Image (tube, rainbow, N blue to C red):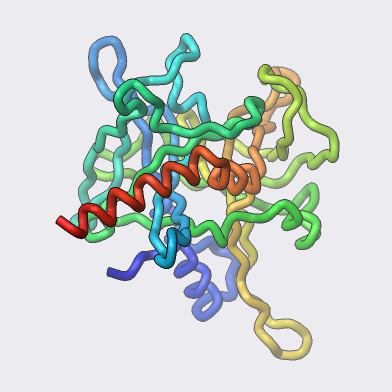
Length: 290
């Protein structure tokens, strides 16, 4: 079975389009996250997206999937984590399934947080069935590295977009994501003060729909011709994760906090996550031997 990558959208953009339209496939990278209220009804809580990591385990290469979101999407109003959240993901037949995602296993957390407590990121091991579900992983190669902003000369005014949930219209039978567009509003070499302390952020001027926390934020440039009649390749990169409105709304109207994407790369490589991959690889090997 061939693994589907979001990079397919980039290849299509190179060969088929010179327009500034975003690749429609990016909408397949996300899942809607729900929790149960006091009446046991499922209510939309936020957005998550799937990242695929190819990792060498001994002499073999294995695929490991993760559901990525921000911490508040997995938390109750009192600040503690839910025991279970629910993700709604589209099926290939045009409908959707709602799957429970346990956040505890034998009393221990299944989720992983960035070791820097000010970084608003969480991942949960997850690998939905690609034969059944109509979604695309974001490969780690699409995560913008630390020097990406400087290398691409991205600055205030450059356009970005995010895909997420629109709580007032999630879709009756399947997820219907909303795509919101915006521009980089501020990039600072100083850390920003949040309720968790000073941390690294980008500020983006955009509208934030209820439930969009945890949405992937992309930087995209379509293919184009340069002056030498050569095609410049399209670029599609995950540059961050939407973390909510920044500061007091009456002082910073329209400003959204974005966790830099390289913080996700750091989280995927912390010792606890690497150890979990080794454990999962051993489980997969043992399952093949049975």
